Each structure stands twice: as structure tokens, then as C-alpha cells.
Image (cartoon, rainbow, N blue to C red; front, side, top):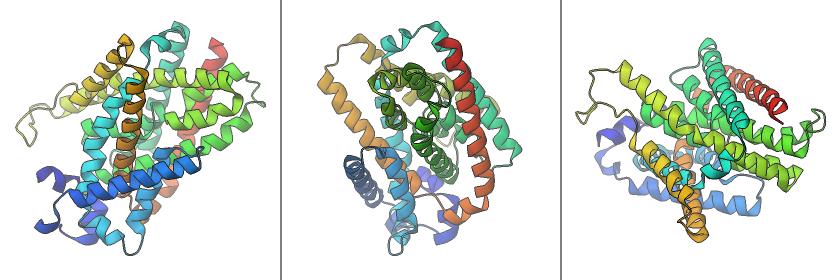
Length: 352
């Protein structure tokens, strides 16, 4: 009960008042999140260039503002949508580890590993600094920096779990990072020739600079299979840095709250269980014991869980509130995009 009440966003609390005892069941919201994930899957099947997770966020935002549905979203469905945005996100992130081929990543060489680590560090710290300078509220600078540096909405969900971020900050950050990553699908292919990038170099640039895995695939496939293969491998290397980044944030939160116990009477864990699960899943993938059919099934389940979670987070976006910080958020999105694309481009030139 405490978790569900805590996770109701500021906008929902302000707009609809208290959630009654009769509406605290998670099932209406979980059902709606599942329907949203199914609709996102159908849209992706119809238009493969549009990532399923991007559609899920958009559908969640639409549901939260659609007359006739928004009261249900902010009332009876809110506990389940909040639960989807957090619990299902954790499970999806654990399954994300099964797609991480550590052996393939290491074949790229230590120069590429160093390049990707440099891109992630520069993007994270540069975006975080700029977001604070622009005065974005709450944890938005931290979450947006994480999304740009690692893997979009999935990374935002992972870091928000250890930072205890407000649901509205999470949803706003997901919306911005998703929008910018989607724009990259249209913009980056137009820059390959002007920047003088070969297909191989272009693939590495896309993998090092585009946020979500699905967006990387959509952006890189325009240059052919060689570019796509390089993009995915470099992207997986960025995903591998999710665990140490989340652990670092957890350590910082733990240090800030030293001596303060959680509602359950425990201090925050130095490494969250879902991060350990992510690393464990990656280790299992590296052994090669899982057949391709199992990996395909896990990937399908991962996409479904993350889509449901992102629908839940999207439903927490309050557009009037977002509009009040829209200019600053847009400036941060553009600035972070310049940072990650510029640093990644320089790194690719140095390593290819």
C-alpha cells in the first residue's frame, strides 16, 4: 500500500485528489498496461521502423489525456500503472542481460571499449551538468543524462529504481529521450555522406550515439548489414555499462542517506537485486547454454514487459506541467544530442 501511494505522481495527486480504498487494486492498471503493450506491438508490426517501446510511451501519454479515459488512468488504473512502471521495468531489465553478448563485445578490441566508455562518461557528466545549469526540476537532469549515455528508457527506469525518483520526473525524462532518439532515425542517415563515414564507421557512430536499442537498429540498417552489425555490437557495449552506472548511483544515494533506513527498516542495498540479475543473465548468455529459441522467447517477453512498463510511465506524463519546463527540457535534449553525437564521432574517427 505504501509503495503504491508513494508512486502516484504529483500531477495525478494534484489533479484527482486521493485514490479511494476501492481503487487500490493493481489489476485495472495492469490490464490497461498490457493492452497498451499489445497495441504498441501491433503498431510496430505494421510500421517496423517505429520501435515498439517508443509507441508504448506515446500511447501512455495519449491515454492520460484522452477524454473519457484520463479519469480512469489517473484514478482506478493508477496503482497498477505505477506498479507496471517499476516492477515490470525491473524484470525487463534483467531479461535485457540475455541479449548482451559479452564475447562479441570483447571482439571489438580495447580501443573501441575505451572509446565507448569515454562517450558514456562525457555524455553523462555533460548532460547532468547542463541540466542542472538549466534548472530542470527534481531528478530530471540525472535521468536524462542516464538515458542519453546508456540505453534510453531502460536505463532511466534502472537508475530511477535506486534514486527513488518521482514518477513524473521519470515519465518526463523518458518522453524527452524517446523523442530525441526517434528523431535520430531520420536525421543521422542524412549525415553519413557529409561526415565522410564509411558504412562500418557509420554503424559504430550510430551504436555509440543513439539511445534505445530499437532506435539503433532502425537508424543503422539504412547503411546495410555491415553497419547494422557494428552498431548493435557497440550499442551492447554501452548497455554493459548500465550495471556499473546504476551501482555508482546506488552508492551515491546510500552515502547521502547514510544512517537513514527505508520504510521496510533496511538501508538501501549497495547493488540492487535487479542489477545483479542483469549481470547474471549476461553471464548465462555468455556460457552459450541457452538455445536460440529460449533467447528469442526471452527477448519477446522483455519487449512486452518493457512496453507495459513504459506505457505506465507514459501515462504519468502531465502535458501542462511538461509545457512549463518544455523550453529548458528541449534545450537540454538538443545540447545532450550534440554532446553524444560529437564525442561519438570523434571517438569513431580515432578508432577506425
